[in-house]
Amino acid sequence: MPSSTDDNPDVIPITQLEQLREAQSVIRREADALMVMADNLDASFCDAVRMIHAATGSVIVTGVGKAGLIGQKIVATMASTGTRAYFLHPTEAVHGDLGCVGSQDIVLALSNSGQSEEVLRLLPVLSRRKIPVIAITRDKENALAKAAAVVLAIGCHAEAGDLKLAPTVSTTAMIAMGDALSLVLSRARKFTENDFAMFHPAGSLGKKLQPVHEVMRSGDSFRVAADSDTVREVMIELSRPGRRTGAVVLTKPNGRISGIFTDSDLARLFEQRRDHLVDRPISEVMTANPITIRPDALLPEALQLMSDRKLSELPVVDADGIPRGLVDITDILDCSALLPEFGSSSASSPTALHNRSA
Image (tube, rainbow, N blue to C red; front, side):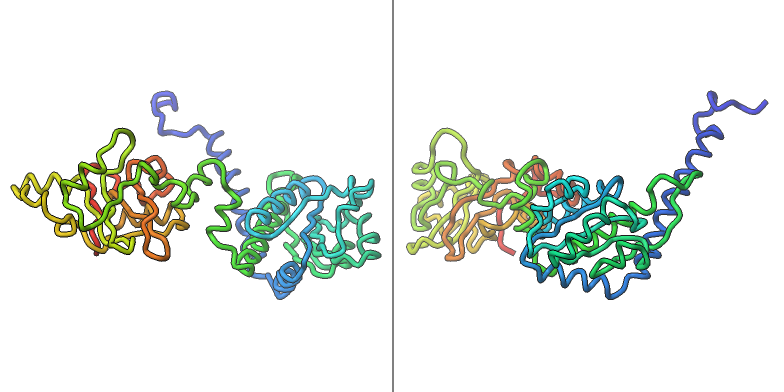
């Protein structure tokens, strides 16, 4: 007798198979629509980028229903990637909120059919005020498209599912068009990783994008000494309770960095029976010209550098070569999970090496 699904958990009930097939059909239909839209993209897209990039005002995004929800997502993406954008609900707009649209703004209107009454009611007012409209809609023949300065056509696609009624394929196409527009604009504006970090100061993403100067050890937690001092003098002078790094940054008489000496270096002197060197200048046993990083570099760069070079400590040095702090691996291990490639690095293990110049 054939075994039941209860006896064999690897056998999927037919109802589940049907559900999986239906889900796959939805995803494939949406993916196919995106490929068609990508293949049909034309110079109108470049016209839209040029218009928005040249505008001195903001992008005012409007749409109703599901298109309105997609519009709000496009606003969020634009705002976080360097393009000032706001969402304007078309119903609220005709009840006074049109006053928030300035003469230098551009309106980005979303409607799959291009016949949404709430959106169409805005067009005469925008036309009288000479505010250009960019339309994201299915084709160039509907009412919205004919009133727009530029049309970003997403194509006429049947919606997914048996009923083919719920906005699915069309909204996926809209969101993809909005993403493409946002990111191409971001590149045109030369939007950098530092700019992105400025707009994302909170949460795990904000932590990942922190500049090095916000996580480095400085002040009493940062040990720095002249490279002409002896090892003993440096260790005694800089011995203090509280939070401390496992390395001392050494400087030349002009204050510029000359080397680094770690607690591991000190232990190695005794292990190798070279303890007589503790009364010699520390410059004789330090690592000269260590690898360093800028204070304004972002945390992922520091993590990657420490991972690649197997460093436990990384001096932070300004443009004049003056040491400003030190990144200690123990302070940023909780951030390493934000970089998947860092998780398996030897820099995150107890056997990580101290700073040695390559």
